[in-house]
Amino acid sequence: MNVLAMRGGLVRILGAATVALLSTGAALAQTVTITPNMPATPDMVKHLPEAVKSRGTLNVATTDGNAPWVFVDAASGEVKGVDADLINEAAKRLGLNVKWDVIQFTAGIPGVESGRYDFYLSAMADTKKREDVVNFIAYSQEGSGVIVPKGNPHGIKVMEDLCGKRVAIVTGSLFPDIVEKLNKTCKSPVILSETADQTGPYLAVASGQADATMNTYGVSNYTLKTATEGIQTQLELSPVPLFAPANQGIAFSKSQTDLMAAVGGAMQAMKEDGSYQKIMDKWSVGDGAVEAFTFNAPLF
Image (cartoon, rainbow, N blue to C red; front, side):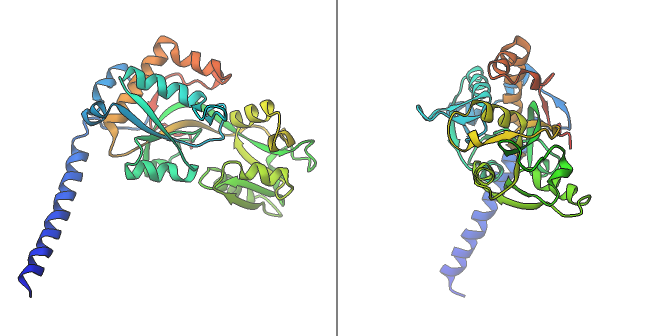
């Protein structure tokens, strides 16, 4: 074999080994071990990684269209809402700024896993299934609702009324599992369609391409009540009782437990001094406040 080729191959092998060692070292460098339902405490801010401290910025991803939790202000282009206020205040307490990146919902967890973002939040439920790939800070509680055309022409009043109907949902949400479970009791199954675009299901219902959609109750209630134009003015929340109560979570890579602990510590301090409740009340979601911030606390 050519000596240069052998040397090149050796360099590639050593390079790969070095990357693997560095990755292992980064994982070993984490000082906090996360356990189920672990409470956050204010002193956890001491775990803020030096690399993040030196950078001075948190790279945070979110998704537009989830007001009052999070949305992009049309006039200023700023990220606003409960999530924005909470994270901006937590970052301030850590001596950091926030760089917001607005992405599709389906790109949230992959973006966190890859290290592109420090964390992701946008009215996302903390579930056991999602905890297979990421960790969560539980920061609020929500249920889900069924959205229908104005006047509820199909008479959808309970979940079973969705049987045989066309239901549009956002890809990557928790709703496909809910529909799958419902279909086991339906004589005529729910006809499910999915879209990555957050407003796609609303558009489908408003245009008659779907009979209903599902979304976080707080998002639906706020959006439909405050809409003065556009497709949301053609929709309403159905009488279907709230379902799938969940802890909403901030998603972190499993290799970034120290950063998660530091953010959780800052938020718990906000809880204890009343700042957290003030923000929740500002956006009329105070009844969804958690008693304490916890790590990995899925309700299903």
